[in-house]
Image (tube, rainbow, N blue to C red; front, side, top):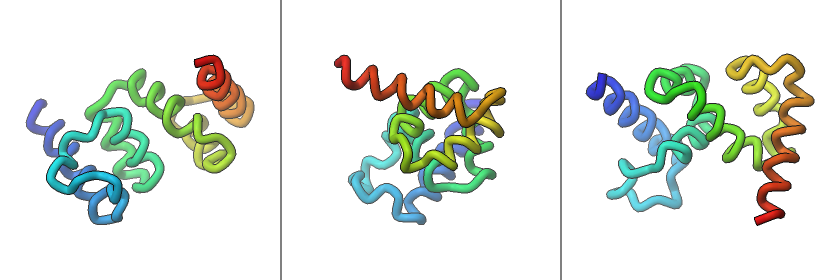
Amino acid sequence: MQKETSDIRKYLIDSLKQGHCLWSYDVASVHDIPDDVLIELVMLYLDIEEINMLFKIFSYKKMKKAWIENVVAQGERYYNLNYFFAWYYFNAKRPRSYVKAMATRQLNKRLAA
């Protein structure tokens, strides 16, 4: 299982490199991307096949937390994408309302800090 996880992780990082999505990282240290950042970048820049791979190596709970904190928190910019994720991956009963509520919650957290 560990080998499969590392293989999937390497494949996702290589896919992000090919898409020039890791421009802010030193190429030599790209293998050290934190899990939540990897989840964010894959959700934003890669396709459904790669997003589905994330669910093979990370728990549903970890995926949802990273999505809310890193993607939903970016607000209106990715509203339609977040609506899709809420509906397709996270089974929100009212995805539009859910995304708006989570975005507001993240904004309030950041303002309170």
